[in-house]
Length: 272
Ligand SMILES: [Zn+2]
Image (cartoon, rainbow, N blue to C red; front, side, top):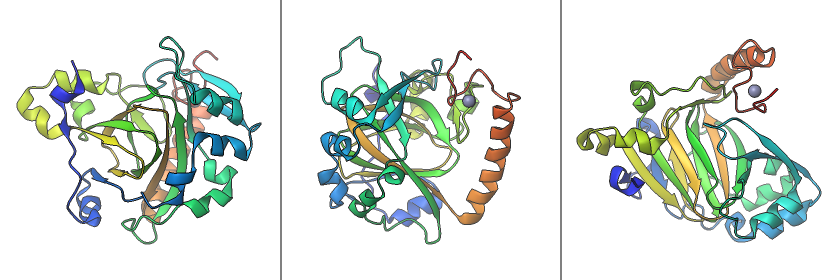
């Protein structure tokens, strides 16, 4: 089974981005960030050179549907290792949700505005840096997300909100800002009759400079086709983010006091 037979390509949009935001439909804006200095200057050696000894925490394998495990490294060693082709049997290590702009604020100068983000929206951004074949398992985020491909290429497989829920595949695994699926998206698509599948399952491959809008609650599974850097930003109105933050904070307090999802979460190692 391959995704091409079950997923419809998400075409480059010819609509105004604000329409996608209003109707909460995924959209790819080809080359919208191609002029950003980040796209031409954020190479792996350049990022590594900013502070090679900076400690980093790496995610081992696909933590959305295998036991969560981490590895420690430093920025220089990790990014140097990414430049080499990964061995087929190697454990894939992924630098996820990395606060690159917090660590190196001068890099903000390499970004430009995304014109479609609503005025007054709250954004939080982080980067995903990983080797070819590294993947993020099927999940949905609680906030709208905007992903900017900086270097390398990446494939997103998307499924409409409700797809995992209707299949009874919600995972009990805890994640603060996302909900996870027990089943991979390709298996879910294969189980559906072709006529209903067409509307619900989409794929898109991002090249450097492409921007993808993933509305909150749209399920997605993501794989690197090459070593890549992705800048990802969650956004929402101040009121919506504040309300959600209160709920997330409450659940997270329960989690950290071991009353909710302890031992099966994406934020702590599985054996503890
Ligand atoms: Zn945890």
